[in-house]
View 1 (cartoon, rainbow, N blue to C red):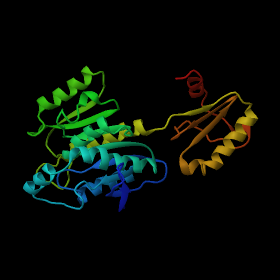
View 2 (view 1 turned 60 degrees about the vertical axis):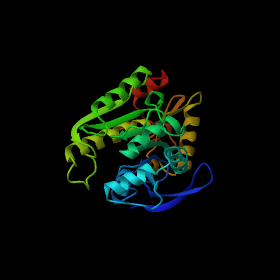
View 3 (view 1 turned 90 degrees about the horizontal axis):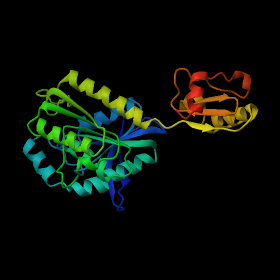
View 4 (view 1 turned 30 degrees about the horizontal axis):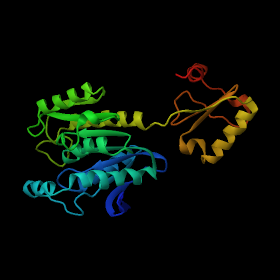
Length: 297
């Protein structure tokens, strides 16, 4: 589904990555690799995000190097410039997705999970972060400094990122006033990786995916835009113009409502939204929702 692309880092250098596209103006997600490199499994995760409606970009932090040997993976991870990967490669990926998407989140596994926390601390353009079984050194990225929506998934049988380490992360965030979503699973480290039969847990992986997509969907939904103080006729004319500008209501999943002197534009539409054409008699929004909007709720 996706393809390899090149994109700029903040310092002007170029990095490669795997881009799986869901379409223009869809939310974005940066997928950060495990210590194995940008392999087919990570590209498959990006493709899966695209099928779920996200533009997904996985930066190639190892510059083409991939391995299946733990010793070599450990060597490559040890040689990775973590600050450079965070401030340049991952931030560059977030910025590139912003040219294609709405809000952009970051997520990753193991090494990538630790880097997702680092990005949550150090990449100001990131809108949300999801970490799978990874924690960076506190001196590099203190979870207590995370100020964006954050979700994490950890394994109870993980010897690298222990229950005590997860508890400390959660306590530090709560002490700083954050409200993270932290989930624990009776599984082993790397339980999400379907290519590793020795640790893969289909049930836990499916539940984690559902929780992550729900979390990212809430974060990425753009706010409602409300136009007030106009006549119904003027409101319908503006609605028609907006529909034309946006290239079609159904194509862009935009719902436009007109009632009295208020226009409500919501994205994506709710089940009770109604599309409006140029005649005020056809605008029949849900009155209860309209009242909530009028009162700022």
